Structures are given as structure tokens and as C-alpha cells.
Image (cartoon, rainbow, N blue to C red; front, side, top):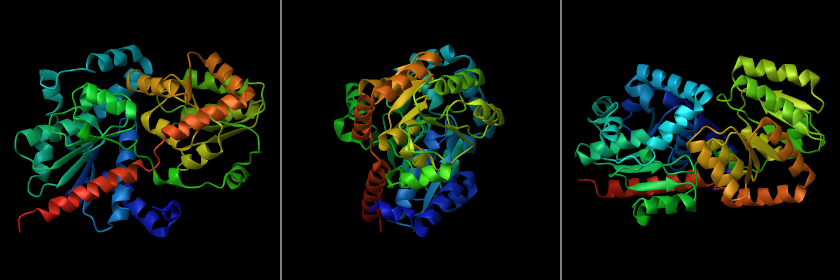
Length: 410
């Protein structure tokens, strides 16, 4: 697809529809979608990946009956709230506890009672909602939703193509289920890890992790710099995320601003008022130019003008940076899946990991003073990125749907 076409009014209209769908489950179900995408809002990456795939599917066929379900929110809103609260607080205030849970379940037996319990959460509610006119294809960007679909397939209740899109750079048992037709993964490392777990190589596609189509656009970086009011010098982009404790967030701002080398810092403070207030207060006393933004929807432009990203290595943010060829200084990844993402970036030369706030400043200083190392990291990032991932997955879904229609009973 021509990247220039991604900025058309038609694309914008379809993107608006895609954004609307996950918040309106009744409308999704009323369409009796042929393709259903299951996601969840834990860290936002799963839902962003779902939307990226959905948009590419509609660009291939705008008449497609397509649905997106925020799975846990749909099957049990109270449980969804509890899980989100527990997840947020554990990764913020008890990261060692979350690491223990992630590690303990990383190689769990698919037939274990724990896995069977997870694979039945919301199963009846979900099945009752779709059984009258089930989708032909289900795409899951959240692991336990994929387990529910697999369980229904094994029980003979659903005759669907079951696709799983893995949104991190590590293999965890929660993603692996007996009745999965194809796994779409972010890297060759992931493919090899799945094969080592006994998954047939013909069921694995190295697609990359799907991101917003705008990460394929050519960005007018000069215009973005003018709009932000920044000059031509190096730019450090800080995206701390909502999971970083406030006290550490403030220390990172201090560490970045304490760098002697000339640079401009762009801070994405997000929706949380406390982070916005701290960043704006720090901006008033910063030694170097600092731009503070709240919630943004133009990360693709910010990454295009940045030279270094400071982040925690979430699956989608990591992938977006790779698509832009943007080196990452990783600080305080969420234990488990983001530890693995950080390891992937470091192993392939696209990131450096800081163990403390002071080391964040030291690593950025080193890279700004050794621009050839920064350029080498940028090259590695671009080689790992798959900005076309959403289109790759959508094309596979579209082809599979055509086959199902062709072989459907008259």
C-alpha cells in the first residue's frame, strides 16, 4: 500500500469508526461480524494492535463486517476493573510480586487446572453473544482471550479460524493454545522460541507487531520542529508511561536535564494530572529547552524528530520506535514481558538498559557524545522494525476469509 494513501479522508473516516467500535459492544455484536478481534486494555498495547489490524482490514474491504471486543470489559466489567486495578498496583508498587507471577506461569502446562480456569473466564458470556451467528475468523491480541477461543474450538462449539497476534517479544504460555491456527510474531527470535515449544513452523508468521499506519508515513520533521518550537539540535523523547512511580518520574526528568550536552527534551506526560503538573513545574526551571505535552496522538511525529527515546519497553512503544529507527534507553520495564522486550532490544543493539536514574543520564550523555554509536543503534532499530505488520496480518485474514466464503455451504 502506498503510504501517501494512509493520509486520505477515507482512511481518517475508517480510523474514526475503528476507534468507536471497542466502546460499543452491542453495535459490534449486532453486525454479526465475519471477523472478530479480541483485545483488552491492560497497558493499551493490545487494543492499539487490534485497531491497527482492523483499519488495514477495512482499507482492503470497507464493507467487511468487522467487530472489536474489549474482551474482559465485555464479559465481566467488574472483573475487568479488578484485574486492571490489581495489575496497575502490582507493577507500580510490588514489581517483584508481578515478576514472580509472570515467571511462575511462563511455562505452565496448557492442561493444568490454572490454565483451564483462565481459558474459561467469560467463556459462557462470550459464546452466548456470538453463537447465533459466529464469526468466520477470530483474531486475538490478548492471550487469555485466545485461550477461550481455543477451548470453544476444542469443544466443537466454534468452527472458526483462530489467529493469535503476540504483542511482546517473549514467549509466555498464556499465548500458546492447542487450537490456534496461526501465530503472528514480532521477530525471528519469537519464531524460534515457539518452535522450541513444539509449535509447527507452518503455524508461525514473522509479521512484526502491528502498529498505527502512520508509522509508515514520511514525516516533515522540519515542520514538526517548528510546530513544537524546537531547534535543529538533538532531541530526547521521554515517555514514562502511567506505570512509573511519580518519584522516579521526577528523578528521570532531573537526570535528563542534568546532561551537559546540548539537547531538547520532549516530555509526554499523558493524561495523569500529577505527571502533567510535575513536568510543567520542572519545565520552568530546566537548564535545557523542554517541551511538555499531555496526551498526544502524534507519537509517530515525535519519534521521527527524536534522536533517543527514554521509555520502559512496552511492546507497542518498543515496536513503534523500531519502525522509526529510534534508539531506546530503557528504564524500569515492567517485570516479565517488558524485561524480555528490553533484553531483545539490547541483544540486537537497538537499546541500552539503565539500572538507575543516574545511569539514564550517563547513557544519554555517552550516546550524544558518540553519535556514530547512536547511528548504529538507529540502523539496528530499522532492521528490526516491521511498519507493514498490520497490513501483513490483515492480508492473511482477508485471504483466509475469502477461502472460508468460497467453501461455505450453498
